[in-house]
Length: 397
Image (cartoon, rainbow, N blue to C red; front, top):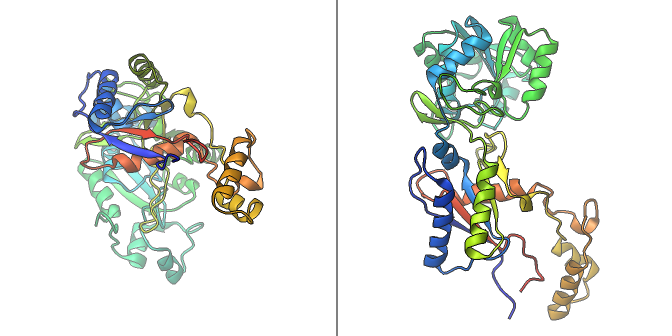
């Protein structure tokens, strides 16, 4: 009988990772122990993935509020600083905002509306329609926002992020003024020194601000992009991808991951005789259909991966073949015809009808999303994910 199981994704438990731990050895040992204990054989083209969090923790890649403040003061001048397009998150942004506020005398906080970049809503779209507000043109003061919409709580966290961020800034000793706008140029009526906090649109925002006359423009990727007083840093992403570690410290996105994934791949080949693929993953790239939150608050799904994970899927749509090319067939005859079609498929199916409806996303984004959903973000204790059969197709027994 043909093999009945296709792709399998397993969460693999690991010890709590601390700074200085030999993550290369830990990951390899955990995978081999899981294989022995759970009775699955290691096979060629299996995938081993680890969360970016344990990589950064092993590296000790942390930055404190005072480190952030010193960097902000040096780069922005320490007076009035515009902070625009932050996401609404206690985990992702609150500690960063504390550092920014400590590095300035006044913060003009400009929030996008009705939602932030990743889909956290301040207000419902229907409320905008009801009040006749145009989010593409209207700039709202805090007073006008409260008059129109009152005190809105986040549906998942129960937090009024407008009040929460304002209080946080004041607690750090800075004045605060809050406005609501979606055109980055609106901040320039208040200050020419700006930190733009958007993740995936940051290059466009910087270009617009500079063209409109901003004098000091920095993205979050340019804050903590070098060590401050011996702190951690990320030369490419700065504060982007950081998470709250303590009330006065953030864990930064990991750096220098490529050597790690290559070394783990080499160790597993030496110990098992099998060629596996290895990657580091962060947020998955998917959207919650109820809360409308787009998960990808990291700057990229995978900061490092082995060569075999480059590219996009090249797959035929089985439903299309069954309903069109082989509509007259059934049973074993249909199965054999589809298998034959898969075996002779072109190396590049882009734009061809037979692949329509397959997912034209990068392999690392698809696999990273699978890993993120498998490991979860809570107390599962499985920061390593082991995937089998991902590159299989209907012809493989």
